[in-house]
Image (cartoon, rainbow, N blue to C red; front, side):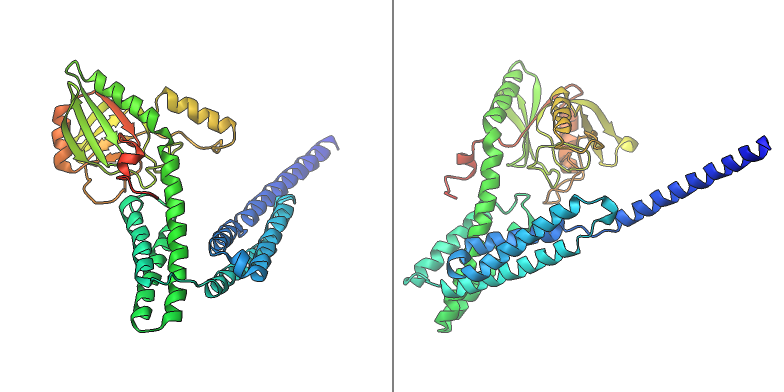
Length: 376
């Protein structure tokens, strides 16, 4: 009888364990298939920002207030759903409110633009003024890794300005005013967002300048050191305090960000050394020189951000940052490495050896020099 009971208990345990495993698997499937509202909320916020910049709170206050209320409802419902057990969360209402908020914000922008059209009496001067803003974007911001919404706003500003000029030439003055106002709103949005990103990035310029000065000083005894300027997209080789080589360089698409983890496609900033030189079958990039990233400062910063919850606990710090060939593509494409043309990596490969210092900075020059004195 004891053996029968033990057998029954054993099978009950096996069945319960199987039920738990199946339930957990079903839970994972259900959670993974849930549609999250983050993208819709982001689009709604951007639409509200553009509406605000179009002074919709003044010229289309009723519709603008409706859009704000809808967005607030979306956020309230999102918080409510996040407080529920994960299997019971339903973001349908959140997404619905976010989409309606975006639609009403866009309608508020349109109505505001129509009501507030007050194109400068000197139309030609207004066109010139706006064209200068677009020109500033093209000179300073077009190569920055900006949000897609900023690129889109800039392109819309160019399109609406062109259409405004055509309408004006055809004597359709009201249409020209409306189109000009649209162009102005989008140009201001693009330039303000891009300008803030650039100014914030250059907060570290004093630190970069210190690194560069130290690197140049280290070269004065005849040693070769490498200094990489990310904004200028140039790799310099210094010896005895002077530049003896310079090469065009390409980076990761997210090159303006501070490298934090594996897969962020950011090119790190700091002081490193060449730890290994590769050629032939040991690299896929013609020739390559491996850097000793991450260094101790990178690791300290990485662990600090993990403790603060700014980086996922499962994230890795990354490695395999190289100076390598296959560059010359005209855009930033690497996984965070520094890409040079094959002929340039050939020259550099012969010029420097393992242990060579490599200092990577955002910019050698201050923002006032980089911006060529342009106000933005």
